[in-house]
Image (cartoon, rainbow, N blue to C red):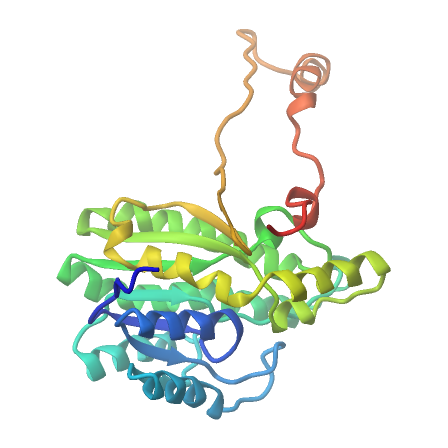
Length: 307
């Protein structure tokens, strides 16, 4: 295996880096030579509480291995606080080269029982959080004409899942945000891509398992999908090796990497006289019916066991 350090001397901000996938990102980024800002509030999976020792522990691990890192406990959900994460990176290391928007919480509930507070909390951390940190970094990326964003999306947004309207909406929104960043910042040689990770983490463990099928699904993730398997893709996208990769959505599951499609027209119908509801039902629906996207969940789309 190559000993190449593909992030040598780059300064990388990683949100939600105290545990799970974020922690693996931080450790591997440092191993590849990056100076890492380890952001984590140390909250419960619901966003409750705070523990500054969570981020500090990852920093200690990085430093013990000979790397450079600093802890940060600002909230990504607040604009000024999110900007403070970027400001700390620049104040500490003199620049910023990459952002991984990984911080997240869950407030799962079936849609018809979801409370506004549960919606707001999840949207604020995931979608607002990705904007807040990305926007702060954009000013520096534009001036230096370089930079890379890696945003965590999810199969819950891309495919669907029960009890996660708030989470799924935020995660699909992140894909739209990433695409816009890629389009608008590419002239400054700034890249923005998404990863939909499939790995066992606190967030997966928190998903209700009300049936034997659900329990078996979670247990399969526990056995076969280590969070460490996601990290190489994030490091690749942050590095100059990915200089030609922009505006894409990838999924990583165990040893599998998928390039995911993005919305494009797949069928068309034309009527020179215009359409009526009846003519749509009689002519368009039969033509389109075989191509309509079925109501599937993540596990239906990626239905085979991790490889």
